[in-house]
Image (spheres, rainbow, N blue to C red):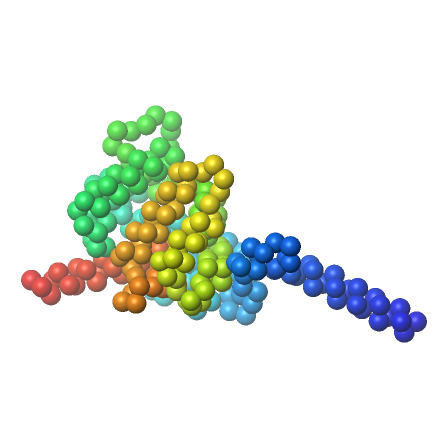
Length: 249
């Protein structure tokens, strides 16, 4: 009887350890790219998609004083570039927004046109293309591309567990910031087979963010990356640059 109880306990323990394991011995990549296992100690229901807030372990309620305005997190990400708040982003608005957050004229022209060329048609309310290349914020979730981090779901909500995974998997130097090499490794790790456009877009997007938001030591902080998802980083950079220009004048 005693032996049976001990044997049963060992079996249950072994089964539980397998059921909850985040590393598979025969899949070395699962060890190399470890995932957080204690998220619930900081974020309530980290596996639940958030429609309007972008929480992380340090900010379980999302960005303080950031007005969601009833928009999804993905919509918030794009709405910064909607200069006249009409729900549509035109190429000249994208250009203006990119300039305000610190990009030079040439980059803002190329990136602005590229953004609208890529996301205009998927976001249109109909099937007829527009030469003005409008991006409709209401339908921006239709422009979600593969080979990304998965932090946005297919409806534009925010997944805390996938955001945190970027740092547990790729933040080898520090758990709250990424080097340029680690950022590159992240985009490589997120690549989906036969998705050339997604590979390029993902690298281009994060490379651009690194250029404008890296710190003096060459790191891209976790807070800056979280601010990309809900657009708060763009708002902060725009205000900071406007203040600098005003001070210079």
